[in-house]
Amino acid sequence: MVDEEIVKEITSGKKDLRGADLYNANLENVDLSDANLTGVDLSNANLRGGNLRGANLTNADLRGGNLKNADLRGADLYNADLRNVNLRNAHLENADLTGADLSGSDLTNADFREVDLRNADVSEVDLSVAKFGSWVKE
Image 1 (cartoon, rainbow, N blue to C red):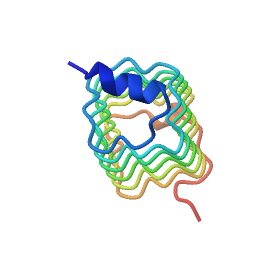
Image 2 (cartoon, rainbow, N blue to C red; image 1 turned 30 degrees about the horizontal axis):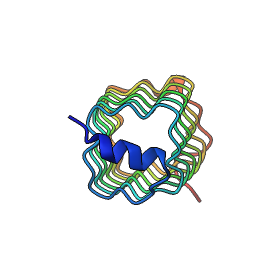
Image 3 (tube, one colour; image 1 turned 135 degrees about the vertical axis):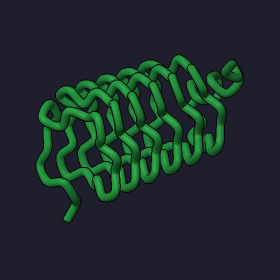
Image 4 (cartoon, rainbow, N blue to C red; image 1 turned 90 degrees about the vertical axis):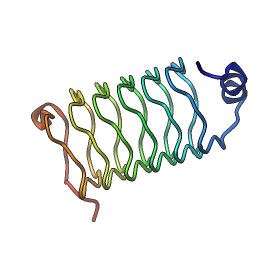
C-alpha cells in the first residue's frame, strides 16, 4: 500500500523522493519535472499524462506502469526497469535510457528521437511503432 503522506507531498511539490515506495500509486497528471526519483519503486503506478521532464529515474522500478502520454523529455532513466510499461504517445526526446530494460513495453507512437539506448533491452518490443531520429545522442 502506498503511503498517502508521500502522495500528498508529491502533489504539494516535493521533488526529492529518492528510494520512495510508490508501488501502485495513482499519480495521473502529476508534475514531477526535475524530480530526484533515483531508486524509486513506481511499479504498477499510474503516471498517465505526468510531467517527468528532466527527472532523475536512475535505477527506478517502473515495471507494469502506465506512462501513456507522459512527458519524459530529457529524463535520466539509466538502468531503469521499464518492463511491460505502457509508453503509448509518451515523449522521451533526449532521454537517457542507457541500460534500461524496455522488454515487453508498448511504444506505440512514443517519441524516441535522440534517445540514448546503449545497452538497453528492447526484446519483445515492436520498435516499428515508435518514432525515432537517431539511436544514440551525438
